[in-house]
Image (cartoon, rainbow, N blue to C red):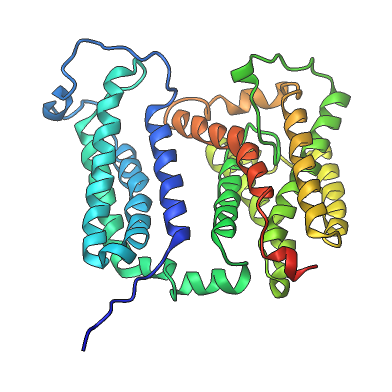
Length: 356
């Protein structure tokens, strides 16, 4: 009797793996400027001696950075390769990506390639791949996380993309210097000068960004939820605010734990939540159009926002040292997020028929 192997599918794991690999690449090559050949053989770093200044934090950070990549690649690949081959390819791919990125750092004056970093990256990918063999099946068809995702959210590749978008939106909230729920800041790219600071102007823009950001993210979340799980919309703001507070306390200082709870943000949250609850009664097409308009409005306000002089001193630590690359990474995610969310809103989804 012929035996047929059942191929498991894990599109969400594939999307997450691709997104995470791109984020790792950007963080490793940030700030992506000043490329030049320094005349040193590109592979000399592989035989370099142990660096004089290296800490346990550096070792742990480089291992942990590649662990999720190795983990996600296993369920992303196992449907076609099988679990053992997927784990092997995941470990090799993670180490290979680390090798390519470390080698490219030869051409960036602000970066120094390191064989220790490369070794830690490879170890992290191997640990992640080993973990993926045991627990990665939760992301495949029939796995615990897949069943939960299917029970709470609509099916389809568009919905998987939407879930990744929401994850990236939460990642952007880890940057304490960005306006609450503000995305799409292109001032550095377009060389746009900020408006002069005044307390009244900053209050209006801050409130507008918070309100429009709440509405846009809320409607995107609403488009993903099944009717019986619509109650989860009420929990949207709590994780985002928790991430913002956690980032402020951990990455800046404990006194900044609630720096986001300004009068402008509180007013914006209240207004955005009220409009969001009313918008859930609109037809799906109107909801998507409203979300797109809110995104555009919030992006315009973000690019007009004056700098907050009271926050600048508190962010000095965040903008240097170990946090420099993470700062650049979260800024990139925040800057590009609305331009990925807008195409998503144009994709028809099953929820349209469910709520028609």
